[in-house]
Image 1 (cartoon, helix red, strand yellow):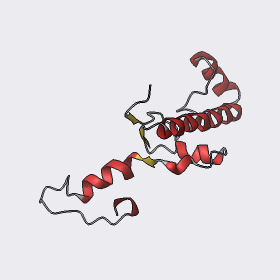
Image 2 (tube, rainbow, N blue to C red):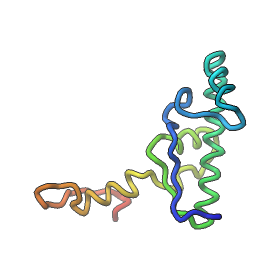
Image 3 (cartoon, helix red, strand yellow):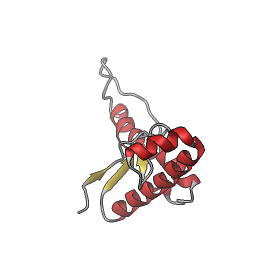
Length: 119
């Protein structure tokens, strides 16, 4: 199955407290977080890289893909996922376009936004 739209809804901005590494129960993750925070973060960052690789595969299969503005692409890139920035973040893909069209202004005037993704 390929979803029409794909995003991640994680707290990837915080590899220690906001992300649970792959292959661990929540209880084991909590224990590792407490006993070895550095090892926990390393496992979280590796999992984020795999997460982004999966998102990229689904994107290539046709899913409209964006991240939630939580830094997951940056962490994946730092872990060797060279094409981690091949999909945009939510703010650039959706919100900036809304503001550029004037959405959100009470006076009816358009926002003047110049951004390469809007050209």
